[in-house]
Image 1 (tube, rainbow, N blue to C red):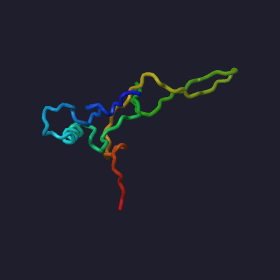
Image 2: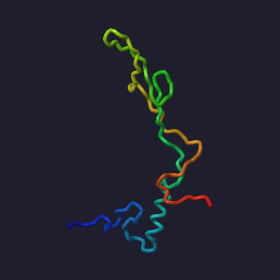
Image 3: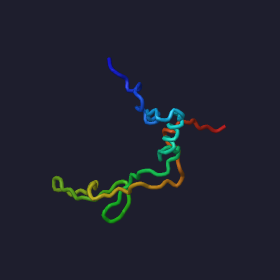
Image 4: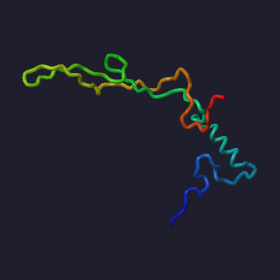
Length: 111
């Protein structure tokens, strides 16, 4: 039916490079070296993307609203209108206490 990608060498990013220049190097040593070189290899999360925004005045909040006067059938009614333009995201913020990453493959328990 077709070839499988798992049979090809070098398909998985943590597998050996596929070159047979140095027969003394083991594939596991190469894969561990690559895992250690990635910055996301640590189980701790130190930063996160903030969900808050700055408005034009420099105020920080999750959402911004302005009061708008709506006239309907001769009656004036105040309504809140959500502002979605001219907002700047807060960006990346540092966590006070590091958290453990969701994909960390270890079960934690208290004995």
